Length: 260
Picture 1 (cartoon, one colour):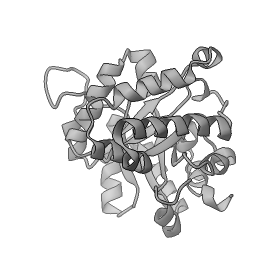
Picture 2: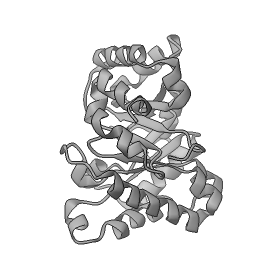
Picture 3: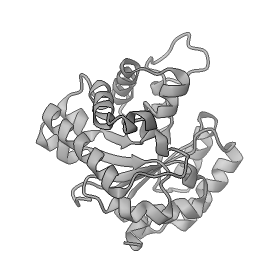
Picture 4: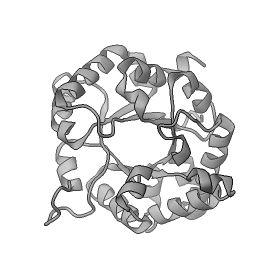
């Protein structure tokens, strides 16, 4: 990983943990991480919506240098959208990162490329950073369509962005077949796709944006494979699922540099 991009390790808690459990996990994580860890790596957690205020309060009161993230948002600021949460609401809670276009949102809730793009713009409009998730299914990979699928999602998701917006974006490459399955792309395979992502950002938004955009890998990231993944030149972080629900495991992923 190039030294000009600061690593970002994000924990996606998905639909796990009530607000009491979330506070407990956050406190255990804060004890496990050191000042040296925070000096080397940006860390973000993405609790369920019902936990956001509780986690935000603990981060603020205890002055914990972990960023608050959300897993999803609507693209409108307000309106008759029962059950939805607006980007304006997230911004008021000091949310810094919002995952947009996660494969579970695409597959289970019918999110389209156009809808993902609209949410990317909504997140940016409120001063937060989108983590744009892209990735192929096993069938698409076996058909040799990985690059076309991933770059198609990337192009659609980044449509209409300015160069400076593209430069500040986070892209998460998460092969769908590796999410929660225990299977993980080899570091070389992950690097190949992440390099293609960076190349396309450069073609669309210029070399400065390509050099600045942070690209995470996600999909069964664990302490045992984090260092090898992070050693690849175009992988700038990890979007961690199941392992982020264990404070010790997640801390060891944040501390990947100690194992390399």
